[in-house]
Figure 1 (cartoon, rainbow, N blue to C red):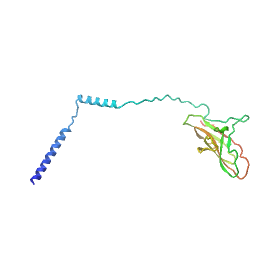
Figure 2: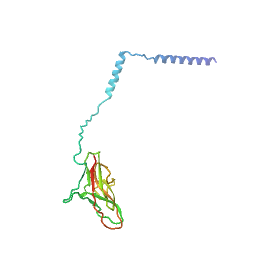
Figure 3: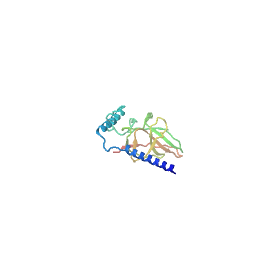
Length: 196
């Protein structure tokens, strides 16, 4: 029993000494002398200045903003003499009865039917106007292709409805559906007007 009390007493003394030591070592003065503060600040500023190094600098030139010259959409087709509008070339140029599909319409020589004339990344709103003849069920505009079939990147247009045309070169893609009667699908036009 005496041995147990002695051990407890020893532990109490050691804990008391430790608490006393912590109080002494943790005591920080509320004000530091200027002789200590200034060197500490200088060391931190010098250390920061040494750590930051400029690797390189880029200069961006001024960017001129201008209105596009000419109309926002233009055709690349030449107007044949004796006519008022250019005529497109159709591929295929003839179709059979009881079929449906697509007909690619471009300017002669495989040139796009029309192209945009405004800065890259911007758009223009225009309105197409047309009356579809029997046998033609719709018109798409598709990204220009050098092939003989319509591009898979296309969008439908509707007569009299304003349409936002992305920048690029465009072909027409006519959607057709024929009956069992042979004959001719008559010629028709598409007018494009610009919207303010």
